[in-house]
Length: 344
Image 1 (cartoon, rainbow, N blue to C red):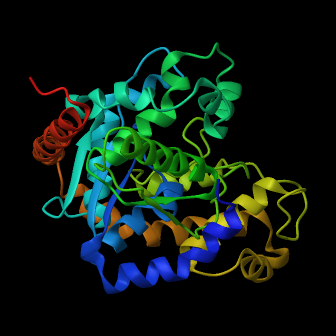
Image 2 (spheres, rainbow, N blue to C red; image 1 turned 60 degrees about the horizontal axis):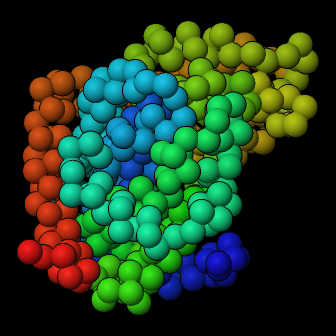
């Protein structure tokens, strides 16, 4: 497996190639619809998707609803989460005429790729995947077959549309390597059908939540993109800080204060240290007012766009995207059957 440093070293050439020849690339990206999308999603993934789309790269965004149940007993309000995510995508600038937005469960041919792909990997390879180990530890549950095969599901997500570019953070690089391995082994065993996708490493730092931990729906420390200005103000007002008057950026010892500083700095395009110096001895109250104003101003356009859309708009986008994804998946599955000698 390539080291992270080696992968980073390839990024300038890859980004240059994308800029010069966007038509050569097809991106597959997405998320599990487990709740509302938040600022962490915007800076970590959504903004990059819009940039690639606008650069002329064909883009596919999967809402992996089947994967919601990899580490939980039920899907919850998955439909609401899917429609909410689509509204945020549209408000952020994703264009459904050039970006295919679809749901995992609605593309049977995609999921049918899982069976031949599973024959190409070993149990040991699945067990040592970092995401599988991390999700298992966080769930406190027994390892399910769905969680164990999660990396292979992701490979099917990428390869069904012959995606050859996958935007990822450092923690997700093993998934791209697994996908490359599956594409390579399929070619060796049956024939050249799938590309070996390249990882496009995003350089956005992890945005901490309002309590200093990773911004996460499960922690309840996130600023959702669909919040109103008043809801945002209330969430920031309730964020934990400390009794020290002078504001400093110290993530290890002052996680709450540092989380607010990082949030304000990210939306303002500044550093947390600059914000801390500006607030100084004015205290946590002044920091919270600054963060509230910064976030609400940053999200104003997004909220205006989102409020002009309806659930019916989101449903129409999903229907169109599902139809497009199904046509591509069926074509790919036909190629797979032919390569495997299973056309009757």
